[in-house]
Length: 312
Image (cartoon, rainbow, N blue to C red; front, side, top):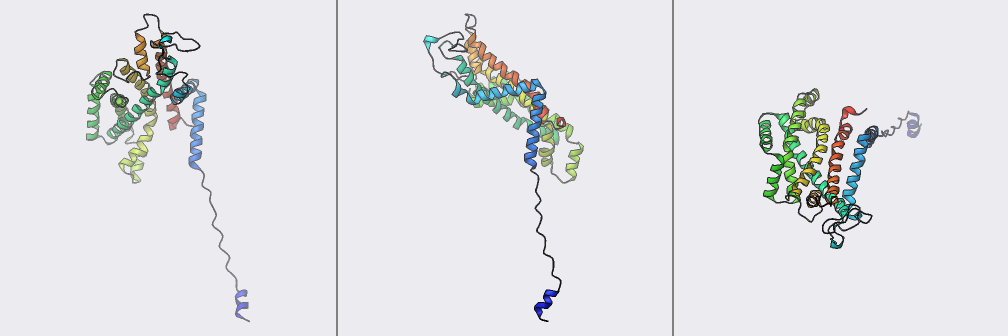
């Protein structure tokens, strides 16, 4: 028998099976879909929350598209059409130099909303992180951050904002900085209290036993668990930031005219109320009130969406 026949008679090894391809579930997409579904459920189950989100969508749309959908140039004056009451041609009337008030209110939405968002983002990054570190680490970190907050709160907050803007100059950047500084103690104290409660919790101790560093525990365990209450505070502070910017503009320390801004427009129309031209100050004031009202209502909805304990 030849060698070829012998090798053919021997049992041949079975071919190795091809490795099975295990399909991993798309966890990020599923998590995003679940979060979106929960947000939709919260917005539709509570009419007040749904109304707040719808109102915020309208305000955001006005801020984005305002300069393009405004029927008139907000800076163009027409003395022949000055002090006209609301009409079909001018929905909110005209001011003392003939500018269309509806166009100015619409365009001013972008500036006021930008000031509010930037100031809240800045104070959350500074005050929130400082408060979390103070509550989690304690010791000298807590003492330093607490004394900084006490020093800021020793001043009347609006007067402090006036002093900061007067010293630095009445620009949009300085208004954002001043608004963030006066809100720093509020964020610092809320974050400190929440972090102080959770720094000895069971899940934090478990994270320590698995070898995580203190900073990693702070960023991955403590900070996400205080986000619900911080989100509510951010929504409330948005309204206060708009009021603060409008108040500074009202007394002449905010945005410089003729830039469209709600506080400037209320200040310009205040002197005409006695003579009967009520619309000059009314409509910017209504826009200011609606924006603050929207952000106050939005806080509860954000808490329900972000809080993990409320998800079912």
